[in-house]
Length: 173
Image (cartoon, rainbow, N blue to C red; front, side, top):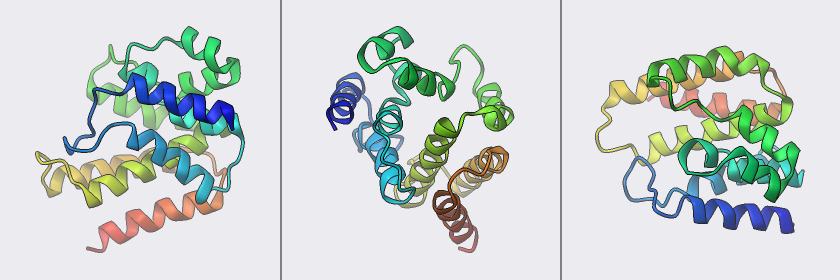
């Protein structure tokens, strides 16, 4: 439990000035949501996987280094977080395509977090659509997220079922 609480605090401090795309929600709500989805829907209780979920955007979206993650949380957490980190030097389109292409190469641990991350993001798009997003932009995001998850190995039936039920309920609207 201490590792998870430490990861929550670390992530909260690193993301403290950031907001979600809705421009209202503190960013830390997202990594907490991802960890909760893993635990509550996926039944995951591995402290290092849950910690990696809490930290999954820190290298990509803050000044955090992989070395910092390793010092604070160990090499396994670092490895999982690195698997989930987009290269911000690439264009948006390249990063999005790489997520699709890289999905089958993810470890089981990273795949669990990837699915939970997409569940969290799609839930936000449905419930708190970013102000500048129209229906087409929402549709594109959900189609892209589905392409990523379609390329992932099957690792957790409850998470996968929840993801596809969410996508299907959105598409039926």
